[in-house]
Each structure stands twice: as structure tokens, then as C-alpha cells.
Amino acid sequence: MKALATVLLSLIVSNSYAGSWTAVKCSNSDGTVIWEAGTQVDEINLKYANFVEGTLTLPVEQVSIQLNKEVTIREKTIRDCNMVSTKRVFAGNVKIVAADKHPDVLRSQFPLNKVETEVICTRISTTTLPCEE
Image (tube, rainbow, N blue to C red; front, side, top):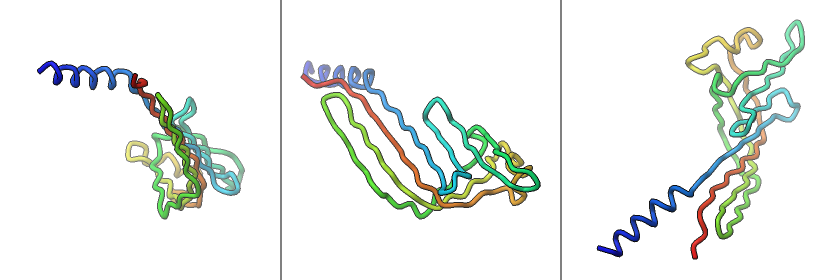
């Protein structure tokens, strides 16, 4: 019973110290589509050139980003006593449409209400855990 209590306490303490975060930044080759999420800046920038040129900047939650045909270019994981960190570089086809709660957010500058392009992305994920003694 004492061993079970020690295991349960260890699990509770481990989970209370555990922390993790993930950040991603993606862009297409000409810089007309760039988004960043999981950092202090959670936004997407979409450049347009209709009758005028400009950039539509939106919070990421106002769009739905669908990444297809994803290919990993490079992935590296570093582990030490209290951290696991992974950096992944990948590419794919992306389709950006208005989120359900914001159905017309793209329509003013993108008449088809969507943007399709190829992107390259970097995702960094870090999880911290207490060191085992």
C-alpha cells in the first residue's frame, strides 16, 4: 500500500511540474501567405492584389488551415534531464478557408473565400519535466 501511495504521489508531482508548448510558423515561397501560432503572435497575413495591393491580417482562429500532402524535411529531438524539445521542418499544400464562426472574413479580398498554396513550416515543441534523482 505504501508503494502504491508513493507511485501515485510521484505521478501527481510529475504532472504538476510538467509543462509544454508548441509554436509553428509557415510561409509560402513568395511571402504572400505567412502565419504564426503558439507564440505571442497568433495571426495570419495574406497579401492580395486585386484593384489595390495590401495585406489582410487576421487572428489565426478566424480561419481554418488545412494542410495536405505533408512531407517532413528535417526533424531533430533533444532530450536532457528535464526537457524534451523537437524541431520539425515540413512542407505541404495548404488550403485556407474562413472558420465557421467567421464565414465571410476572406471574401472581401479573396472572392473564392479561400487561399491555396504550398508552404514550408517550422514547428518547435518543448516539454519540461522534473529531473529524476
